[in-house]
Amino acid sequence: MATTPGDTDTSVLPGSVLVIGACGQLGLELVAALRQRYAPHLVVAADVRPPKNPEMLAGGPFELLDVLDRTRLDKLIRQYRPKQIYHLAALLSATAEKNPLFGWQLNMDGLLIVLEAAVAHGVAQVYWPSSIAVFGPDTPRDHTPQVTIMNPNTVYGISKLAGEQWCEWYHRKHGLDVRSLRYPGLIGYKSLPGGGTTDYAVDIYHKAVAGSTYECFLEEDTYLPMMYMPDALKATLDLMHAPAEQIKVRTSYNLGAMSFSPAEITASIQKHIPGFEVTYKPDGRQQIANSWPASIDDSKARQDWGWQPDFDLDKMTADMLLHLKEMQPA
Image (cartoon, rainbow, N blue to C red):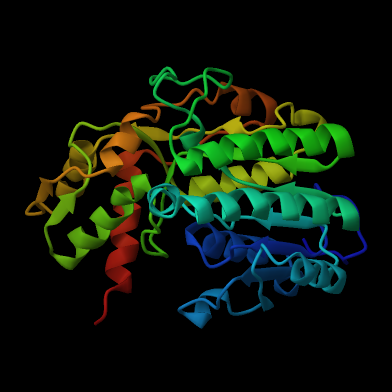
């Protein structure tokens, strides 16, 4: 239901919403989900450059924003007076390893700028995504607990771990209602891979539908936690609209749905496309994957605010292939 921007019940509608990093894999679909849930004009999409396909963010306001530009961010907050900010702008794992100083600056300074602006302007809620990258080679790989050893060895993971602690600090010191999820690899059909270690699980579907072979940059038996985009959107919106007293974790919640290897996703695709072939040529992303969990214990999220995924591997594969085939040029 839609209400006016003056309403304060965030469990119903947070007034206007600002989504930073709206042109990314998660951002495009989150903006669409928020605009479907609320009045579209109340959901403001923002990114450092316009979307490659303007239709992806049509139907509501779009603003240019470099999240490192505090002056510009302050102006947008004064203009739209958002009650919620979803801060998604980041340099992902493999990309950040190639440009570590900028990766740290964007991921860390960007978060601090958003948190400071939220406090200064009285923004009710902030959402910031963390990742399984916060874990490291000494973390238990199977059924990784909510609280465990965390010594990430990538710039992306280091920035996400530090960011979790800053989120908790701003909640404790300033009373800011900041919420977070540790996403596994996210798989969706609406955008292309964005430079993450788990992005093979997006690209492989595109290659299969195009009738190509796929060269995988991970070994065939590398297990990683994964999630289909509809489940990621559901989890994000469920978390942000849960009553504040149910949110017991103010760093970031473990979030899980399924775990599989390249060999298993290939077999799932071959049930629909029997001739699909995959070859393997592991590169530097294999080392990153080896330091991440193989499966996630998300019992805390299930207990606190009722998290429950809808998709397993085969259900996701059928849906991905259906949509990608529909998107093929005639």
